[in-house]
Each structure stands twice: as structure tokens, then as C-alpha cells.
Image 1 (tube, rainbow, N blue to C red):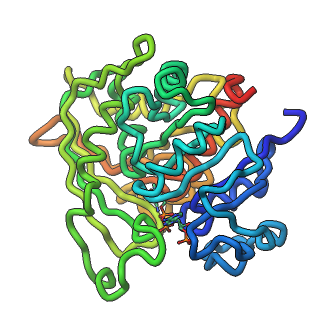
Image 2 (tube, protein in one colour; image 1 turned 45 degrees about the horizontal axis):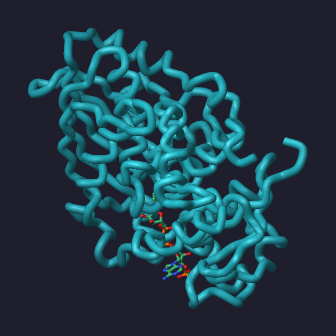
Length: 350
Ligand SMILES: NC(=O)c1ccc[n+]([C@@H]2O[C@H](COP(=O)([O-])OP(=O)(O)OC[C@H]3O[C@@H](n4cnc5c(N)ncnc54)[C@H](OP(=O)(O)O)[C@@H]3O)[C@@H](O)[C@H]2O)c1
């Protein structure tokens, strides 16, 4: 890339917005040119508007940037969105209409038929929806989404099994970190020493999104994968990292060694594996007992891998295992940046 591509962040002051800043401040292809947030923040220097919570230092250049309103023109070809769904529903199309490529974490457009729900290691072909999106909506730009954070780790763990053995049924229970609720998120008196069931709308998102991601792109449409997913979701007192207990039914009998091999051998397409943010191994199988664990494993591969372990026969379905991923990295900002890298490498930003 001869010249860096100017990019902006919508929702730059929040939990995911800060992860975007951390990644974009040192990105080899992208140059952070604008940060935007709500009226509470706009007009202020970023360092004053945001309560920086990451262990890495906020770069001085970015701390001094003035926060824009999400409705303002931004000097960018790409915007990364870390807005809540209601705000995203208005703000993201406005950017796409102005000619920007929007890479979104919000749920607002994920399930629209003409919007890619992209994990490039799995469904790179879904970018074929973009010409239809642009012509139907008369946008010069476009929206590309990444999935709900828990969905991403489930899809990653299932895909190597689905493409080789055929997944038929999935039952998943999540144990999700507090950073997944944004900042300030869940009150400490609600979560300390506690577990909160039924994260609003989370189970339904997982159930529908995983079928779209593992579906087939045919022409400019996606045919969802024909399996059934049942999800239960829980907030737990963990800072970062969503853990998932997964039971899976396959279309044929498969020994444990074959499942482990499918995970170990899984790699994205070469053009995805070569991208700056792509993990060397998208799925890492841990053979040690009682792994993966958020405290020990969440930062593996810089937070970009999905970890799986504890594979055992399941008395109800065929196999059960534990999956884990970093919710604000591969589950959010890192996923969007990887999506944008893939689009750039495919010439979609030229
Ligand atoms: N946290 C995760 O692990 C995670 C993972 C995957 C996806 N997501 C999704 O990513 C998005 C952001 O989540 P988050 O956890 O970063 O939330 P958050 O910490 O609450 O941050 C929300 C951001 O949106 C801005 N915002 C709020 N209301 C606004 C408005 N009316 N107009 C313009 N900007 C507004 C906030 O700006 P101010 O600071 O000015 O209020 C802030 O920058 C959500 O859609 C969430 O579902 C989150």
C-alpha cells in the first residue's frame, strides 16, 4: 500500500471504539483521520471526552483530536462503526450514501439480505452482495458488518466441522465478559460475585447470525446453513473474553482425532491469511485439561484467534467442547479491521 487510507471511527469513545484506536494507531495501511461520538463528546479533545481504559497508552496525536458528531462530514474513505444499533441505523446509511465504506459492529444491518455478515476466513464470497446493496439502495459507499461477538467465536469453532462433517444441531451456553456490555455497562453491585442470565437479544442474534455466516453465497444472495442453533447467554464477572460451552450434532459419526485435526488444519484462504490483522491460526485447539480459560488464553494471537478445548463425547448430541474469544478484539474491533483489510486487498476501496 503506497499511501495510507484515511479512516474514521463512529463511537470512538466507547469500549470498542478504544480498541479501534489501539489497532488503527499502528496500522500499516490505515491512517486514523477522524473520531466521532455523541453530543456529550463532540467538540472536545478526545483525551477529555473519553475515559481511556486500555492498558496501552492513548497516543498523543489521537488524544488531541477534536471529537466530531457522527452526522458531520469526515475526511475518510472508510469508517469503522462502534455505535449502538439505534444510532447506527441512522448514522451508517448516511455515511454509505456519502460514498464511505462502513465496517460495522452494530446489529442494525447484519441480517439485511444485501449486507455481508463477514468473517473472511469463512465467507469471503459474501462481499458479492455489495453491488446489489449499492444499486438497490443507491449508495456510492456500502455497509459491511461483523457478527455479534459470541457468534464470531461459535462460527469459527463450527466452520471447520461444518465444511468437513456437516453440522446438524448446536446447543450453546455463553459466559460473557462485562466489557461486552460497553462502558460503564453492568453495575458492579449487579455483577460482582454473580451471574446474570438472558443477556437481552443475545441468544436470538447468535441463533440467526451463525446460519447466515455458515450459509452459501449464491450469486448476490446468501442461503442460510440449514442447521438448528439453540443458545443461552449469561453475563459473568470476567473482564475480557467470552467463553462458550458448545454441544454439536454432526451428520455422521466422527472420531475425536478427526475433529481435532479439522480445527488444527483450518486456515483461511491465502489472500486472507496474508492480511496484517489475520491470525496465523484462526482456531487454536488446546489439548491441556481445563482450557481454554479467559484469564490465561484470551490474548492468544493478539486476541484474534478462537480457542477451543475440552472435547468430549456428548450424551445428547455427538460432541461437546469449550470455545473462547476476545470480545472486543476478534469479537469487535479486530474483526472489523480485518474485514476492511480484506476489502482493501480485493480492490473494493479503489
Ligand atoms: N463491547 C463488546 O465486546 C462488543 C462486541 C461486539 C459488538 N459490540 C457492539 O459494538 C457497539 C459499541 O459497543 P461498546 O461496547 O463500545 O459500547 P459503549 O462503550 O457504550 O460505546 C458506545 C459509543 O457510542 C457513542 N454513542 C452513544 N450514543 C450515541 C448517539 N446518540 N450518537 C452518537 N454516538 C453515540 C458513545 O459516545 P459517547 O462517549 O459520546 O457517549 C460511544 O462512543 C454496539 O453496537 C455493541 O453491540 C460490542
